[in-house]
Image (tube, rainbow, N blue to C red):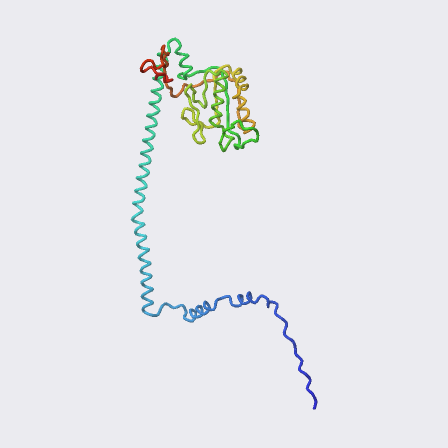
Length: 310
């Protein structure tokens, strides 16, 4: 009996190139979820017809009616409220204009009163100055002055970029050291007085013995009036001599240090003729000589207060 030859295996088929990407292949082959596919097929079979039952139709009609009512009410409310809002806006604008006009009027009254007070103070100085009334008016800033002098212009640094050298503002806490500060102007003005200036003005503001140079935010105030750079300082005196003395003084060297270390710009020049206005406001004070025994406390009411009478 002959033996059947063994059946030889034909071998397994070669693997697919995308066999290692079965998940990606499944996503590509079944891009639409089965539930969505079933709902889409059911809707296509129904043909997208309107609801056929009475309840469904009544629900659709009620929804449409409610939407129409909401839109209508919104349009009506906007229509009725628009004139009210416009009227309130016009009333607010009118009130702003009225208050602005009132403020302008008050400022004019203040300026008028300030001018009147200044004139009376100047008249009092001239009346009680005797033979030296002209000198008193000059020193107090009560009158305009003109003559040879000096012009000093000080301005902020370009870009206000601080330098790397020594800091002449040893105790300064300003964040922007490239800006001219009130303490800088104080030192400059004091240096000019000490160098022999007879009268000084900054940007047209006449300085007196009672003038104050302060800072308010980023602005420099001279007698409570804000100034903007560049700051033009005019001083009456021998221009060339005044310039030399100021630049050789400690305050002149201070200004030079600001130029070198912080880029603050300045220029100084002698002038053949400068004109300074009178001070905008004056405070009239008089002094009395101390009598013998004053301030010793021997007599009642004679205590020394250290203040003059006004």
